[in-house]
Length: 116
Image (cartoon, rainbow, N blue to C red; front, side, top):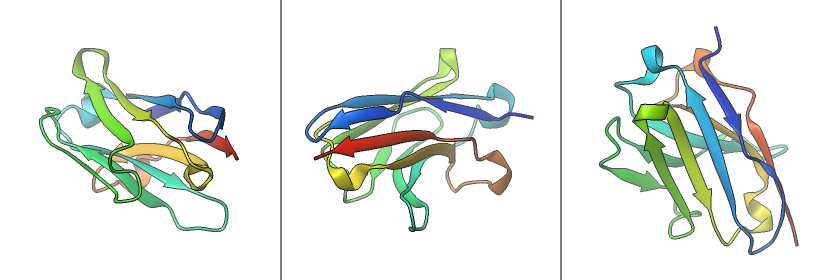
């Protein structure tokens, strides 16, 4: 059963912006903290951003703090990641999941490519 579907990735120039979306299963995630994660080629998947179930508290990896914003629309069962001032090192496949993540809930991810 599909739990999350990520979208919104693409190719962007350094300094540009993208907004990622994650439509999630209401039954599975409605009362869960959620997060965005990313994995670059040859690297481990890493944490990017966290949001509580009600959206009232957020936290970010130091590498994206001040540039990325996580939000959610509970009425639409959708999680967002607004990414600004993108850098080549932000290029990766981006995933959403509960936080801490559940191994069975990873989606296919969405690819972000940043050209320098």
